[in-house]
Image 1 (cartoon, protein in one colour):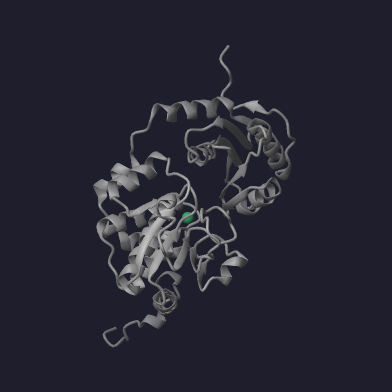
Image 2 (cartoon, protein in one colour):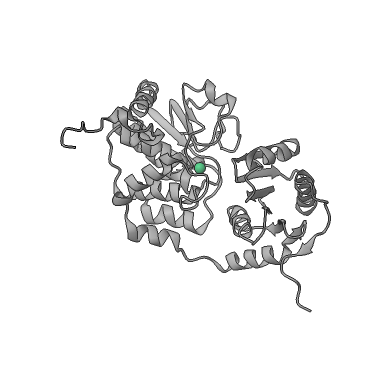
Length: 362
Ligand SMILES: [Mn+2]
């Protein structure tokens, strides 16, 4: 045994997560595009989730350290979910509403966790994003960007950004590491859904670097009374269809748009359920979220098909997807009902009133 040659890098099974040559090559291309510029705006999708926020901050760090750019990370919409607000506050993340930085000069626009065609980000000027990093399925328009790394395989954009930091031999500080870690953790539901080997690899790499008490404070935030009222209303209005294989809930007007995906996520854990759908209106738009336990259906594709004719912008992938549709004078209740009927038909169920999830008390 003493003479056995030690295993070389090339003897190991190929692992997309630690394919260092590929990563270094991608990093080189990214920096090549970045280096001709001075001031970068890094934009997430509207109402960003932890993965989007962390990716933006991570890319800002990378571009600052490795390409000497001055960077601004920004988001459209609001950050409303209690965990996401806590993430910004506890970690002091350098990201701000795009309305505050819109007029700052810049010569490079970057997109993270979304892509040019999706339309769910707030850029009022006609600039075309030139640097796009996103784990969602590749859209044709992204290929026009000077640099694009889209489609993964990764369960989170934070994983892709972490891979760039690693390729650049940068060690993120505890706050950025915690943000990226939480981005991966929340997008993959604790590495339990739609995760790839790369996610596990980066999660493990980040773990020793994170601020554990800070993470705990983010994951267990205090919530306003309106939060319980919104849940109460959602449960009260939730209707079962197809003998319990589907649940739909129109939450009415919501105080933050993020509570819609949160409720869809909660409802999909119902025993025996194939899919859940939640809707809620916020500032003239109807938000909807679909969650699936059924692997045979692609949530992202289905939501895009349903929402495109209604003038909505949609995003998502296998088991989770969401959209927002401008109301344009339409009644949110009627629009939600139309949408429920469309989804029921798509899943071969008969549209109708269904039965209440929580039987009303006499
Ligand atoms: Mn994501």
